[in-house]
Length: 420
Image (tube, rainbow, N blue to C red; front, side, top):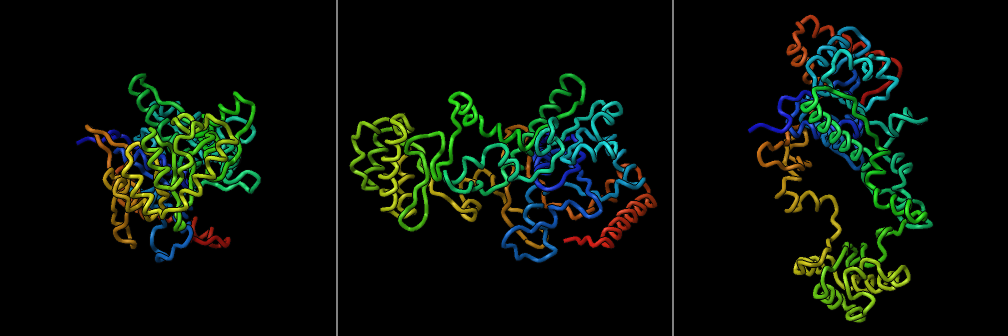
């Protein structure tokens, strides 16, 4: 059965999380993704993350997450052989995908203006930190910087306290998601109109996209929202996270009818809320009465949720189909959640050194042309020889490319650079 992007070739020159995550989506949908790495490799290969005691030669989680299933070609683009390999790859590629900064790309002749005349069918796609225009177009970025500048951190944590981030690289991964969407849109446009084009987005722009409701709220009211701790900043009502008796937590979003609301109040011994006209409709429970009343309601709910354990609340909530409520799961629980497994959001994969482990799967399901998870991440330069032979390079050129890479590594080691 064909996959959605079967026959599409992507030349990926990316680092870290944001750019590679866009390539991951394209790969899961069937594209061939050839990741061109510098002699020392994508730095994400060497960032092990917290509490990682796996063997030193095991691929780290961040690299597994966004580069599984790709081919790795290791080249020194400052040398003739490396440049020639990229030139030939561009000749067969449908997409050039990158998150390198514009000055570097111009210096290497890989900017859109240089490539477009020679490759008019090419979709040239780049994701940056702060967007392609403006005074900070080429400013370096890491995930938290985009969250801070885009305003998301101002809504995280508690008002009056140091802002607390959401605990995941959502600026990076969101930017990659937007770039992947841009690429498939451009590929569709090419099929309709016969031309390639430049596609650009950014982490900063993605933060604004993810906060459209909250930013529009500020635009209309003139009042920026403030962090509310366990409660959603733009909802004044019951919606929020509550501690349970045994140190867990549950998220209550909405009781959609009076039967489920009354059942909740009885189960949590919050009898004073039953029949209270301030909260006797779903709309009122989502914030109609106002901030002062919302604070009163939340205090009662806090006491009520603390009367039962997380397991007791979980059993209760799943007996109430009109109660939108979930226990707060940690990552171990998420990876074993039967709902995630049933939908193949989490799938098993045989990984080098690690063995068989669950990884995040292909989240988009298609009935006639389904994508699929392709396999583990590549070793650095694992496919250099294979790809070069497909491009009609001989053994001498392949050996020369390897010498160029080793010379670049030796020069960096001489300057005190260390791999890993």
